[in-house]
Image (spheres, rainbow, N blue to C red):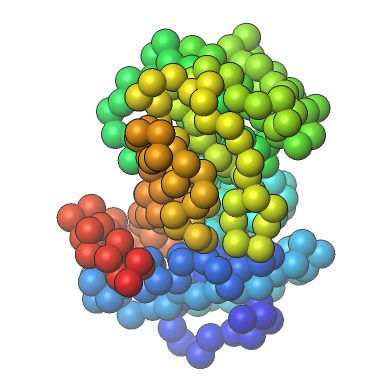
Length: 279
């Protein structure tokens, strides 16, 4: 749906914005929770090209029914810049995926990706562990920030533009990180995270030799379209632990839902939610 098309007046709503956006499962996730909690509100897709992002926020500031939005590719960096206020988390990460009204026409940016990324890792101790991260965009920033703050010993960022990987490491994991082009291949690691769009439907494939990963390593792909990516299939074939993109998507959506609608969805519903999303 084009962002200029508004839902019926008189009903609160939130939305996910991006370009492309039709693949997003966020409306299904938030819609499930709205139904379970009996909240009379809506959550939808809104296609917002990069050149329209500032106009989008200017319009939403004036809409009393708008409760906020999730920002996905390619808006996470620009959304931080365009908001009037920033949470400490968004400021630290340098990217925002949640933007909401803050009163008097102001907008607040926040970041739920950090918690969403960590949620499926549970209480796994990353102290002394080595991690490799693919990508250097908004999602990768949240991942590197989370890993650094959870105590990962070494973080290697691989990106198609090595200079971007270097800048990310120097900013968020100084003294503990390495950077290289994605063609350089993997280093020995306990955890591999694909935080890029590579391997997503309609995007270039992610071609990696996983043999350098350490025995028992975890491979975590934040891509969820397709859900069972070639990267995860390769990892399973090697007997490695895998985490799919729905895990992070649901985790970050839980925090965003609380921001938008003032209620926290129960984790006990996650099994049913996942069944609906994968049916």
